[in-house]
Image (cartoon, rainbow, N blue to C red; front, side, top):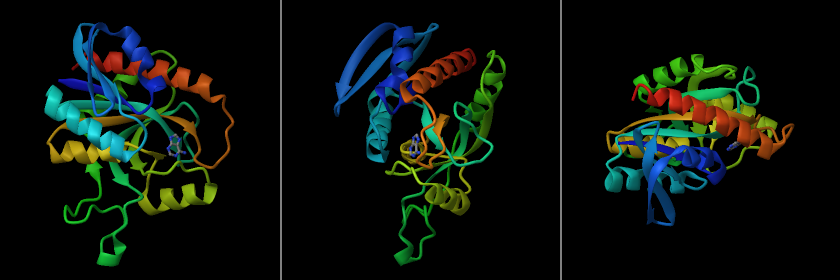
Length: 230
Ligand code: ADE
């Protein structure tokens, strides 16, 4: 079973509108929409903001809904200078930039005892996302790269530069690495697809509601194209 996840309601609203035969389930304060898009069965959910919400939601998807493929779509702050607002990053892997147990000798980002820092996305899903974008007219620039996650909205240029340099991340958001770790622990495939909403530097040169709408439109088009091959 395939899950389509977002963090915020705005990020999944268009998917819900596109779904047929929806069956609603509630758990842990989350609403899971079971139904079809273009005759493909999916579970749609917005998990809330942050790594804890994302991890809880991912585990429920796996345990209660038999999910074995996860596509997470949403927005992120660009760290790479080559990325403009609306451009899309598809995760090669994810790191928790705010996880630091250096006092016990662990490299920053490493999950203690699990001894793991980078959680790799499913290569086939990454390739499918990149290929699918080519079939959509006027799709923005799309690249694959590392996504950094932490329970912090990054809005400072120096901090953004520091994170980019320390972890070689293309963009920063607040859920991907939690989905990634939960998926890894359960042997489930995932990909995180993020549209750039800002440059993580505190400047807001876009009309956010308008941007989210555009980004959500692009995400729906991309996932629909991917669904043809899933
Ligand atoms: N999501 C969108 N922009 C972000 C940022 N700058 N930091 C963290 N999460 C984000």
